Image 1 (cartoon, rainbow, N blue to C red):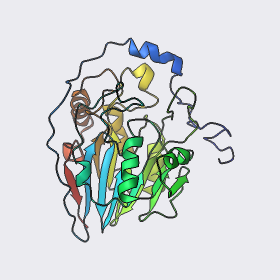
Image 2 (cartoon, helix red, strand yellow; image 1 turned 180 degrees about the horizontal axis):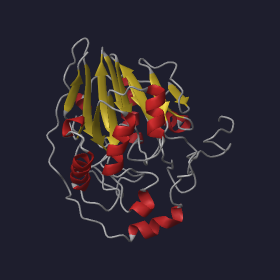
Image 3 (cartoon, one colour; image 1 turned 90 degrees about the vertical axis):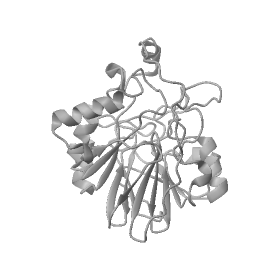
Length: 315
């Protein structure tokens, strides 16, 4: 592990601005909040990812925070989760309301996996083991996640700190700040770092923001790594605010993050797949549309995609 820094005290990581979320003993109070019931299943027609042209960058929304980025024969998969539940258990925990928009067997050969942090809705060991057995890709991830990934069979794991650029990835990958936390169980909170990724692909700068509350780091990302051509920003799992504000943006904050980044375009993620918090399944999309109207942001500048849908960035 690294020496103490502005976000690591020698044992645990933390958010430098003090927005470090509620303690675990507040979770029962969260669970007592009235929850809007989600449908058990929303029909999804999976699609095959397109085959990009030689100078084309294609981004496909697989679902939740999982994206496939294809450029010049390099296929990057971010936060891959194909399991039915975002949970350590196969019989309990948040269950998928929407199937992945791309079948696992329809994935192109995966050249690189990016893992933003170790929460179960972003880091699914069953999916990671399948990817390793089929494609043997390298993985880039924040500090402290290597041991977990090696337990899934990965031999090429590069752990990096905020603002560091991976040394062995097939594309330039820089880890960005995010305002969040990590845990796989009750006793390992913040033993591993979290973050987002700035991916340079085909002359474009693409930000996958990971999980994050709203904070000054979005302006910092823009200042250090801009201009941002495309930002993938979370809009869901934000209620109740007393519990979630530090660690998950609501839609209005996501729109502000888009503005702070100065992104040419943003795409929403982290909604409509796993019910992690009490709001309804369609609420994040409705509230995003309202926030865009209130801020005067054209809908084509910050859009939602259907799972399985792809967008292309022209050269």
